[in-house]
Each structure stands twice: as C-alpha cells, then as structure tokens.
Amino acid sequence: MTEQAVHTDPSRVYVDKQSPAAYRALVQTSEAVRATAAEAGLDRRLVELVNLRVSQINRCAYCLDVHTRAALRAGETSQRLGVLAAWRDTQVFTPRERAALALAESTTAPADAALRDEAYAAARAVLDEDQISAVIWVAVTINAFNRVSVLSGHPVQER
Image 1: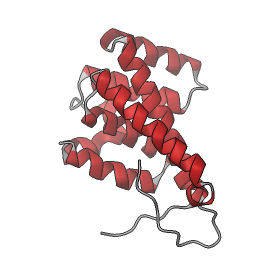
Image 2: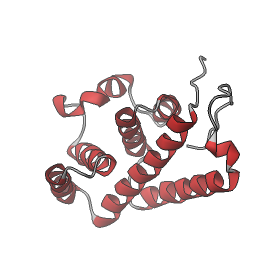
Image 3: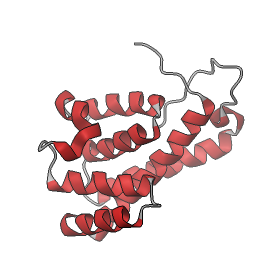
C-alpha cells in the first residue's frame, strides 16, 4: 500500500505523516515483500486477496478501498471480491487460494494455536516453502498498514 491519506481529522495523528521515515521504511518493506511474492510464484491477484482478507478482519476501510481497486486492476472479479469475507462457504477459490487465505487469517490472529496449525498444514499441502513465507510476509505487512490507517483514522474518499 503506497497511497497516503489526506489528513482531514484534526483529532488524529496521522502516524505516516508524523513519522515519515518510519512510514517510508514500511513502504520499502512492502515493496520487498511484493517482489518476494512474485519471485515465489504468487500472482498479484492472490496477493491482493490476502491484502483484502486481512483488511476485512482488521476493519481497515482505507486499505480495503486501496486493495479492492488493486485487485480489480490485477484481473480479480467482482464476484470473488464480493464473497471474499465468506470464502470458506464458496467454491470460487482454488485450493491454493484457500490455503493462502487461511494462512493469512492465522497470521492476523495467531493466538488460536489449533487454527494456526490447521492453516499451516493446509498451506504445506499446496504451497512450497517460498510461497508460505511470502504469504506470511504479505499478511504481516498489510497488518502493519492496517494499524497505521485504522489508528490514524485515514478516511475513504468517495470517487
């Protein structure tokens, strides 16, 4: 996520603007993670599905807006985006995508050991070690961006 929000709420500190060096480091980390995912053979659609699912869990409206547009640009369908929150209840996601989504969810809420172990086992069945690492890194970085945006109160601008 490299877009920055326009500061509209004076009661909030936009931590990305208040600490620009730290934010730039996070952006650089995100760029490295994107390259790692591509090198591991994860297509941009899958990366954006992970970004979106984690942002749904974290209720980050700003990141949902940014990554919905990115997913559509990457060729994702509106149907799949519409049912992403209920991905387990559909048949529109591949086993590889389902494993990545489960792994991303367990990375976002790692306290549930049983869920984490189940997700990891499912990922091992369809993803190689580089891909597992990349999915976890994508989830870690979007979690960080979600916290920056949610805690800063970044607004979603109507288009």
